[in-house]
Image 1 (cartoon, rainbow, N blue to C red):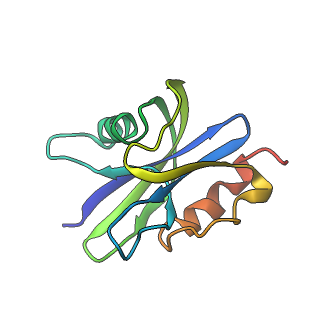
Image 2 (cartoon, helix red, strand yellow):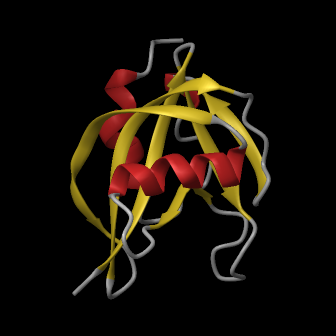
Length: 129
């Protein structure tokens, strides 16, 4: 059975939040959607809310799911939801940096391979610059 990783496509003010990985070394410096693994006994939504609180220090409202299961490394799949901020200002507690991207800046960063198709899938939801 594949392990589930959840991620949030947080859109605020017409911009999408991207997070730069701190590790592991093979992924460090790459950009991703914030999130993480679903713990035993946790729903996908509970995990996503917890991960955004831990990683970014924010409360989110979970919206619609983006696509189906996105493949990651063998044995893992990523599930992505649109999300909006309901409390806090994002800070990179577990990442090197955060960046808000407008539609015309979306591909100015080096997305991790698993996250790039998700960025393409949500592009149309970001306001034109």
